[in-house]
Image (cartoon, one colour):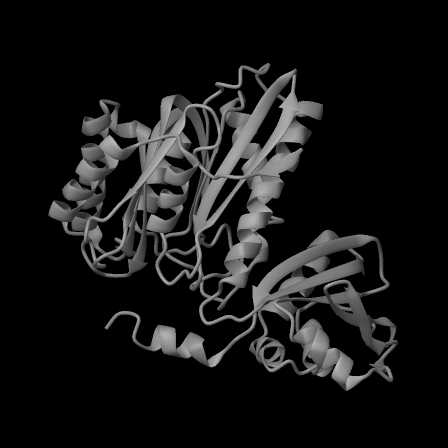
Length: 407
């Protein structure tokens, strides 16, 4: 199993494109299209926010009631959330434009939107975008990258990943792209994301795989503790690798889940690192917790603490903030038994042991915290369960970016 170059066009039979439609932005791509040459089994997970955008409602209905899908059209700039019936009609028209251009059924077209809440998407711009996207479809790596770039809003880098592994003597490929920089909180898959694969797998097992996967990937990231109205994670499996169809749990299913995890965790970490205004990725790993659930709660409590995030930004080894965040998480533990380390680039330093600070070097701690990727390792000494969560530091630029996001 290995990571390869590419994204959503890496698997057999998948094409993509990005285009400038002028929906909200000028002089940048703002629409993307992902297309499978044949029908693909579809699965998905969506925002837990009670306020759901029109494309979320559309996609949920397709995932729950249809076996297959063949295309995903995405736009950035306008979220099509809180737009009532008018927004739902516009979303359906966007899907219809794609369906007509590709000569596929309406219910085989999934949609996704991201951007400002409350604005209506201009349908004339959508038509322009679709007219550009369909002729530009290609299975090249470059086109996959264009699609990943086209869904960016405040993201500073494109986010894509692809993995290959062998099954039944066949080479299986998975490729994915996502966007997410702000309004990111671990509650489903807080982002837009599309994964494509040429694996042959039943809808039941595909849905089972992603529901299991998001618990340890997209559900374990946070930038600002805000759960979006538009969070959508979709996966299409077109079966062109021609492996024996996966219809139950077993070795083949486990291999697929491992590959999926490589893609989703890579995307999740990239999103956390690219948090709005962020300068570094902040990872927290909790080990020796009593239960998996408690490990998850503890790890999330640390990465979502604003005081911890600002300390990480300031390269300040303020371990008290981390211990405090563990303490208000809701998990009962004995602080006299907890050990806390920080590490980066293979260098590890113990800050706290058995209820009190160690005699650590502040200068060494500052050096570790100054790196682009920093980990806090918490040993609870209560059991054998582990969880890892990813976040970022909190900087002045986060306020600047979000202070005038709409205006």
